[in-house]
Length: 284
Ligand code: GUN
Image (tube, rainbow, N blue to C red; front, side):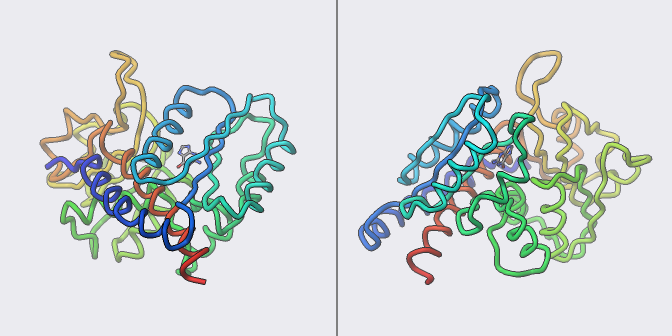
């Protein structure tokens, strides 16, 4: 079975869209997400364009601020601080990666915790690991939703995550752990990786290498979640971290690339923006 992130994302977004007119009337304005893009990396441009499209679809106000990669760290931090102070802004997202002369850590910690729709602020990360209320990072949140949607039971299962990034590997491991999976975090230097991954009931792959996971690394009946977005070096087409054609018959459920995790990340971003807006107006 293929888990269509696209279809599930569409449903999540139409649920949000249905609420926006009533909320706008009640609180005097629609939710507002500001996305900052530094430079012109084609991957980042495409992510940011997708986010803007989703905002339009659900009826949010969206502002995309674009800066050349010559912007200084201090100038960028000032932009973020101004957005923090702006009462008409609910969510602030700085697209990563940033140019080397700008500290991503500094930028992330400057975003107000209440507007941190990515869930990357150290206080949000700490809250997640301490089981406190927090904004959940979008990709991990989307992955759990997809597993639930596909009817994959997480409790007691053997989950293996390939990748240990702050954006995906670590937080998705924590969310799986919170659902009572037994979680193994692996990476490019894990010895005998295939022996570990082939025993997984749930395999989440976020390593950023085209077709890294081959059929022999997937156990019969596993649920396979592919977070990769890469270019196939042979065809130039978009492809995941999993060799989809080779693995799809072994997996019980599998996510495609494109149309899998990507749309779900953006749907969860819309949810997080709504959450920030409601925290400001409704829940205070
Ligand atoms: N770059 C790749 N993924 C992400 C993400 O989820 N958020 C941000 N801000 N940048 C990214």
